Image (cartoon, rainbow, N blue to C red; front, side):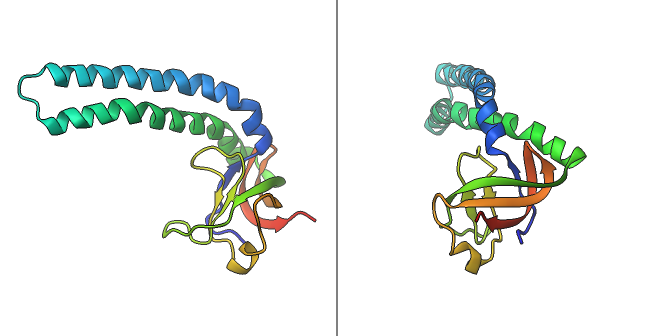
Length: 161
């Protein structure tokens, strides 16, 4: 049993739509880059700007375009299958490959990461520790839950035999 019913897009959907997601995320990241550069130039020309503000503006020019682009890509790859699964989902099983079972956090204890998933998806939390210890990188698992062929809200996990 998986706690929280995490949404996971199918590996097929992610691989089929990755080019589209990147073609939207790259211009979005470039837009943020332009806006951050304008802010940095404005701060640089201002007479009473602190060093702290300049460093923060410079940091935003370097980091924010990548972070924003990553979030846009993840949203593009997740939004449609999530809504489809929520509105028209039925009992579904999808097969995935395990990426990693190590790591623990307060927000996601006993986690299992799945291979090839976008940021903010593909991490299952609350997997029983005895079952999680039987999984290794590359192990094929089947997730069962409510969804479609494009993704599902995972309720159960089992090893493919």
